[in-house]
Image 1 (cartoon, rainbow, N blue to C red):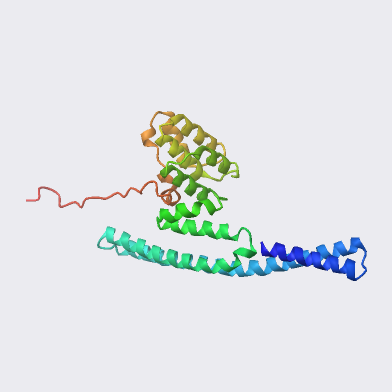
Image 2: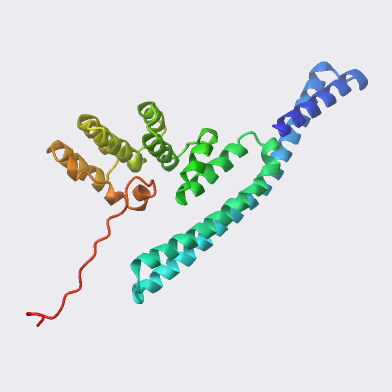
Amino acid sequence: MLTIILSACTGLVLGCGLYWGGGVHGGWSIFWGVLAGGLVQGGSAWFLRGRIKRLMDGVQGTLLAGQKKLQAKVNQWQIRPPGSIKQAQIEIEREQRGFLQQALGQTDAFAPYYRWSPLLKRQVNTLKMQLHYQMKDYAAVDRLMPSCLFLDPMTACMRLARMYVRKEEGIDKVFGKQVARLRYGQGAVLYSLYAWIAVQRNDIDLAHQTLLRAAAKMENETIKRNIEHLANNRPRQFSNAGLGDEWYALGLEEPRVKTQRPRGPAGRPF
């Protein structure tokens, strides 16, 4: 916001100065005033963009380094399984929370630039909301939601998921607004979430029609399979598990872990 005010003031002062003090024709004074304002605006935007990009790269670097470290640990466990799966999961969650909190701390560095960029605070709040969502800190998520931007399918899904959990009205309206922004092939998780909500409400027809709309815009095996289940009156077999991490990241369902009981030697144990 301050960049706009600064550029406008610069253009106005220069234009008026040239007209009243320099004897420049009115048209030329306006031209030079607008040009000066544009140069100030462009220079300020270039400077801010560089600063903000460096800060954002730092946050992304923290997240990528943390994810790389976790993946290395998971790969190691695949070679040498841990003694306790539950303890391993707790360790993973603890380490993930650690680098997510570190990234959250880095977002404080954006604060001095909020007054210079009108949308920056909302963009940073959206990033904070996503980080809190990954940590399942839903109280912070709900607090940040009103000041976030929902410009991609995943953040839109987070909003819808919280609306469903909090039993808020307006889910249909929000969904309609979000899908209108999607391009062809986008939004499988968004359509699937809305269909899942419809199934939970026992509105099977709405769920079926939603997935048919999605199938007309993309190729997705999970959507096709759920269409078949609903068309054949098998709503209990509806499952978004095929969407993988995108689905489970919303926190509405937990992944099912198949466990096998160890087999003893053949025959009777005694």
